[in-house]
Image (cartoon, rainbow, N blue to C red; front, side, top):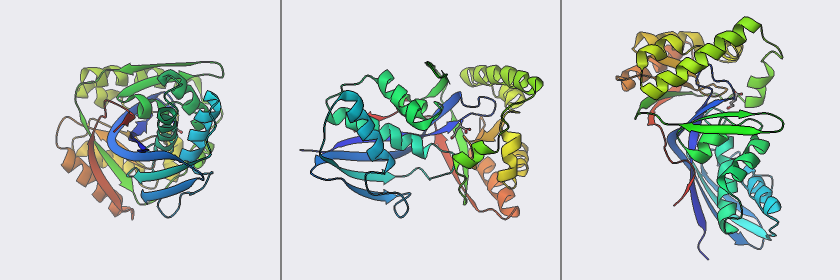
Length: 297
Ligand code: HSE
């Protein structure tokens, strides 16, 4: 039998003020090939080839198992080939891509017992927050809000846009980047983010880079995470100086994303140089928004 093959995009969550709510799918992909076998075998190429688990504890395998359990399907084992282009621990949704890849491929192997919305619920349960798994599954810009008892989400149509992604040579585990956040925030900071989040969403939707330049700011997570990301503020400043309209942490960081109407390569270089001056090597990608999300190929 032929393996099923699923392509899953990277994602940038938060987008500044949209902490745990906004997520954007990017044109950088992991591919998951899955077929049934007597035992579980995992082959990994690319990112994480030497570090990720190759047994039942691999996140893609765990997600597949979660799907089979939810659908009441029994499988002996799985043969998996993972072709990973999304760097790990960089705030680009690598774990969300693994979860979504495992769920979608397993759903396909099981002849699609679950709907997309069921898959998203399982993915949010596994990841703990919706803002990476939702765009990884659905594509585009997704706004999601999860509570203990419900999950509301919608895709927001965007005009075509390119963005700069600058990826430093160090990883920051999301667990650590969440642990540094305070349990409570001053009301004025919550109010600040409410307004900024709504404005950022409108600016992106309209392709209004002037508004984006005014609105893309955050007080709920970035100021605290700056302590874990040497040079973050300096690189933000270099991006703006080079013409970026908005700049933010990608997810929990440490990667940074910049939005601009033009000059993406120059902005990327300026950010890279600024980081280098702080002793941090970084690489630059100029990406677009993935509009499709996880898909069979
Ligand atoms: N919203 C999550 C966070 C994204 O900022 O912790 C993790 O990639």
